[in-house]
Image 1 (tube, rainbow, N blue to C red):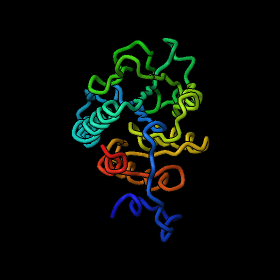
Image 2: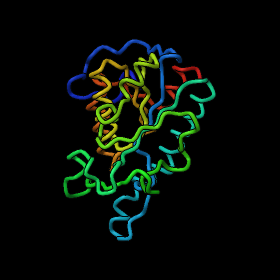
Image 3: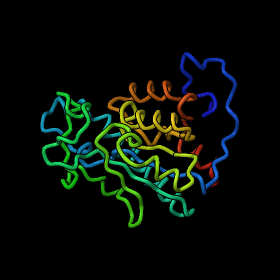
Image 4: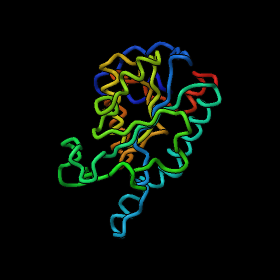
Length: 223
């Protein structure tokens, strides 16, 4: 068991194992998507609070500590740490993409200066680090991230964040279409449920990215 054989979808059952990963530190960055205050807030509704309890437990017990650890490793090795968050530039949200204006859970009105739209304190960008604000699911579509990565000579993007089946997946697919090599960290991501998280990893693995644990990435990178 390991990243070479785990998270195989229907399409990749029996496919050859991928080659060893060679990630040049000078060409590799860490990108974290949408781990913001709004998503860590508890609902006033008891039923909703219970429904989201597994997600919050995963975030506080696994995802945030994992991302914080990886950010520390990247910084200690002189590697770039990038951040993306979902927020709107205008207070009334007119600049949001359609996916953020539809009724229901995806409806997001997060003006960029509000506390709820900020990255959680444990993962706040350090001075000098790239922080992108997007009004789309994909961090590549809604920002100048593509140009930034190209200018920096980046070939490999290590992805963490939420939600695995939404903004993370959308960003992964966009990066893959632009021929970036994408690594998704399983214990650095979460969806609304573990089932959605696991299923999305199977969907995107091997075609759009490689899915690794943080320990497997540390072995590859020599952290």
